[in-house]
Length: 106
Image 1 (cartoon, one colour):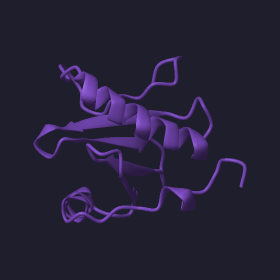
Image 2 (cartoon, one colour):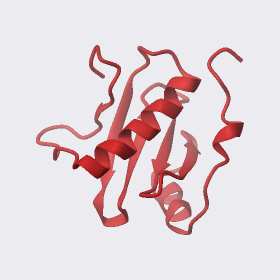
Image 3 (cartoon, helix red, strand yellow):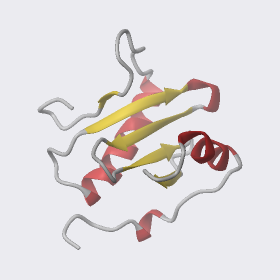
């Protein structure tokens, strides 16, 4: 994560630059994480172009991943959920109630 608080690509090397639509989804996911974790907490992202989606992850042990759909809806997956299982659940259309995600201050 940069000093700007923006997530960094979760893949090493030549990660593709997000499109404007993907950047909007990254901002949705980052804003949700910033409600739950400190501003300087490390975040990473993956682009899911085949799904028209992105993931934004809290890069700490016990963190988690937010799968953000093109419509801005979100699925939260705890770090204990295997990524392939979380993606399958996301693709099935299941989403999280973002009002129930805990805030950083309790």
